[in-house]
Length: 95
Image 1 (cartoon, helix red, strand yellow):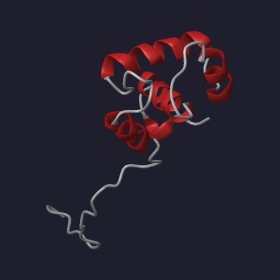
Image 2 (spheres, rainbow, N blue to C red):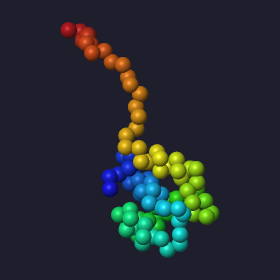
Image 3 (cartoon, rainbow, N blue to C red):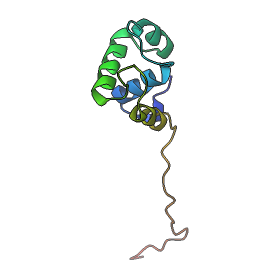
Image 4 (cartoon, helix red, strand yellow):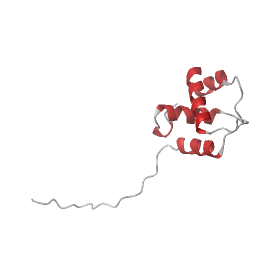
């Protein structure tokens, strides 16, 4: 799977983990989530540690509002950039 949104790898792994959780996190789900996400079990455990640290899952293992926002932001394929008007016929100074 491509790196979601061009994020740094640890952040992309968190987004990938959060997007593969169906319903809620369950103890012992590391193997299943590793198979679904393509991450290794140690990568899943490390991403889960970051998820817990950042408060992206609630005490019942469900995504928090911040968790949903992280998934949404991370899965955007490209950042929306403002249009910057440019001069199609620039003049070169000094010529």
